Length: 95
Image (cartoon, rainbow, N blue to C red; front, side, top):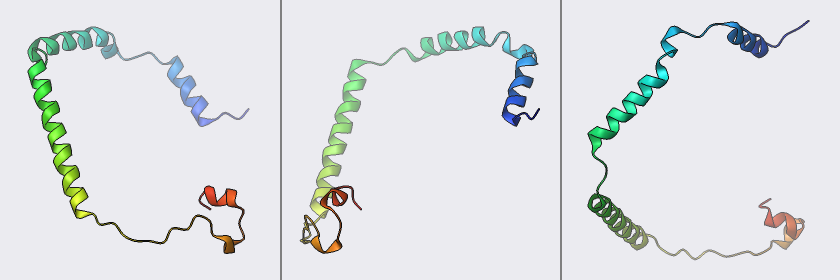
């Protein structure tokens, strides 16, 4: 009987005992979450509003700089190239 290496490794993991360090993992994670929440004190509405306003202004200024530097280039627009020998439906797919 031939076994896949993946199946062999899964069977080996299923029959092995977990390490003892995993026994208290859930309790340690919960304690770390509880301790971390008490230290931060939460976010203030004023701080969130200030961060949102700064992000909005940065987006407006950055968009204006990019829009001012870009030029409209006059390129010919081809809706359908009739000389390619392709059906119009394939042109819609980008082929």
